[in-house]
Length: 110
Image (tube, rainbow, N blue to C red; front, side, top):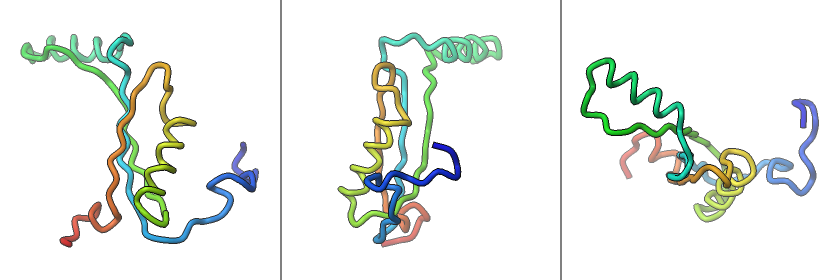
């Protein structure tokens, strides 16, 4: 779907959600059985730089997503769908989701 294409009517992006703002912190990592050539290269480079105590390095991706949702379960469900459909490859990667409301993200005291 290009930048000018409209979202399908039944998609979550079709209508703006109202409600509290949530922040999802998503970490996507390769499954333990998947080779990580980038991690191996980084580990070797660290050894060459004198960091001999590094046993291994695994690479991954980090996303911070702000979204509006009626409640925390709805926000978690939306972010999980994002991960399954776009952010993570379920064959090769695992993901974890950490949810916080927007005030917690900004360091406000509750």
